[in-house]
Length: 154
Image (cartoon, rainbow, N blue to C red; front, side, top):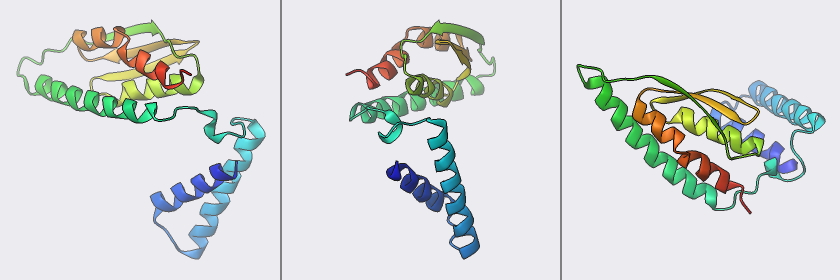
């Protein structure tokens, strides 16, 4: 748990870039308060975030960066086309990943990918908006869901 507190303080220092005494004190206070609240809620166990991803996470990140780049090009092509060939869809599917952290990663990965947006995730059913029918097909193929589910596979 001490590692979590150190990560919070390091993240605050890195992202704020403020090193004046008052602001440092307030930043450390906010990190301590966050740490105490997380501990009281029992949100994390004694393992760092209770996640066991190993090196599979790096492979997933590489694949996700590739998907984001390809989707960015596709969305740019659609937006620049005078006919604006969009066919918006809302799709729902049951997610394979059962761990709450995996489901959050899946929802965020979908939202990070241009042309898709996670609308809701409730009781293992994810609802997402897609810009095109092809995007809906890609999402419904389950490739991203399978890759996220493998992150936690033992």
